[in-house]
Amino acid sequence: MRIRLVVVFVAVALISAVTATALAYRDARTAVLQRTQNTAVNDLREQVAEVAADFDVPPDQRSLARFAAEVSEGIGARIVVARHQDLVAVSDSLADTESRITAELRAAVRAGDEARFQRVEWRGEPYLVVGMPVTYADGDRRTSGLEVFAITDLRAERDDTAALLDSVRAGIVPVVLLAAVLALLAAGTVLRPVRKLGRATRELAAGDLGSRTAVTGHDELADLARTFNETADALQASDAELREQEAKARRFVADVSHELRTPLAAMTMVATVLEEDADQLPPDAARAARTVGAETARLARLVEDLMEISRFDAKAVRLNAAETDLAETVRASLALRGWTDRVHTRLPEGVRAAVDRRRIDVIVANLVGNALRHGAPPVTVTLRAARAADGEQVTLEVADHGPGLPPGARERVFDRFYKADESRTRGASDDSGQGSGLGTAIALENARLHGGTIDVADGPQGGAVFTLRLPLRRTEEGME
Image 1: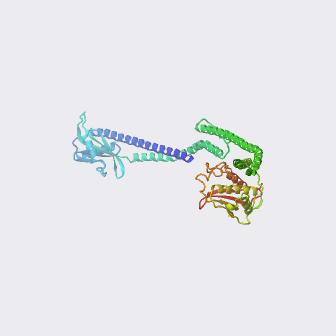
Image 2: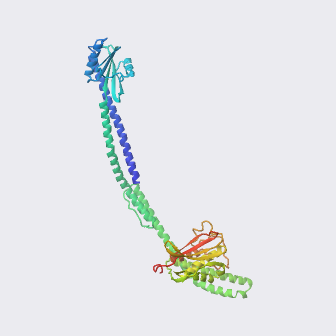
Image 3: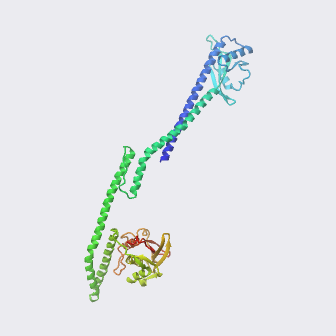
């Protein structure tokens, strides 16, 4: 904006200066020429009247030459041409007058009874030619047939107007420089509050909700700064309210989850007893007992997931890391859930890292459970150690050959309570620990706790591929 303001100021100053120069030159040139023309006409008229009083018509060549010489001497030695019918006399016998007195001017003088003038150029130089017929004295307005022409050199007037134009042109440069300086000063005055407002806006966008800008003056910029401060106040108040509501919601979830654990423990114990005796119950009662047991187990897992999420939100989780064989950890996780025969594995030996084994088990359970629930066989788990740009890392890929993620699900698959298929039903036989929409969110939080991440992509042959990436070694600072 500073550059634009300077350019506009300079452009306005330049246009104004050029316009003023053109007008001044035109008016000065017109005034100079008008004064010269009036002087030439008046001088010629007065001198002709004075000399013609003793002049006899018709003249001879000698008297006509004397008449031209006396008129020329009286008007400042300008070239004078006197004509009477076929006789022509020139005050300067060496001067070329024929090309400077045009036929148009001769005709105008011959046809009228007043003085006529015309500006002409001869050999690149400007001249003023004034012509007039000589009338009889004693109030007789008839022309005598005698015509007089005076040729005036206009080079001095041309030089004067050119010098004036040069002077005005020379004044344009300081005017433009002054305009540029004034533009810089004006730009600084105008843009200083704009820069402050921009800095405050960037701070607000970066999360500093206490950022404000000083309000000075009563102009539009002051109104803008005042509006910004009011908006920031409202935003800060809304943010504080939202944070308080979010904290209350998290405390509520944590408190509810904690309070549910005791009755759930009793319900789980009763459901376990009912399931064990289900074979001795009537068919309908046995089916109900098994359903209650499965749903109670699912509710217990949901409460545990909510408790885990609450701990992540409260920053109350700790990483109990130890040197671990990752292949062994993955196989144990699959065996614990009875998935060994349902999953193809590529688990090379000797891949070890400092991890929290329980949390790696949670990640594997969530990723493989999702693949088994929503994908299609074969489900493949591949463990690799590789070198990345930021050091050595280990990757664990879980791939299936199902339909893959629906459009738009990839960006939200790690959101809490998000379900790619909202219409799917959960069967009582589902023991994967999934269905709440918290599994992938918990897996991602556990990966981040290790300093890693989880990516999702479409498989080259269909299906979805979830990739856990962990640093192969962690620093003592990362292991709390």
